[in-house]
Amino acid sequence: MTKAGKWIGRALLWTAAAACAAAVFRWYAGDRTPLPAEPEGTVAVLPAVPVLDLNGATAGQLEELPGIGPALAERILAYREENGPFAGADQVQAVPGIGPALWEGIAPYVYFGEEDTAHEDIGGG
Image (cartoon, rainbow, N blue to C red; front, side):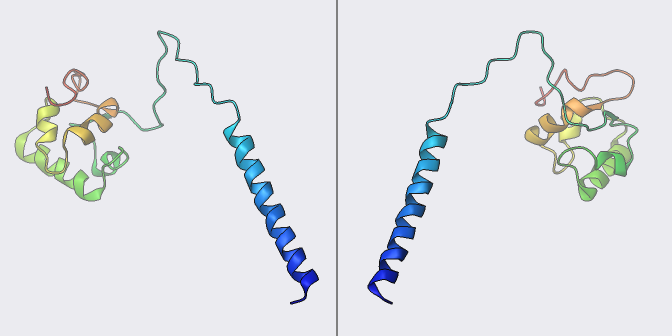
């Protein structure tokens, strides 16, 4: 490579490095003020997941809940068939594969028959 070719290569490299540094600086120097807190009385919008009766849901319906796949849906149905309808979070968490973290993830989307007690005992209490 000639001296001119090396010089042009180095110039292009330094130009690219300077452009990257400038882009990072502009990003870093940007407005980073925190978002304002939600006003009191606002309601969080949940993802579009159906609200299900755990005592009447099918395997396919259960699979629409976050964290529930085909195998876990079948375990839920088997537990319900062997032990009768669910009455609270403790019973749901007795299903192998459902612990406190998964329960907290699905609790907003489920209820137990006509009386909605799902949200009274989040966390198994």
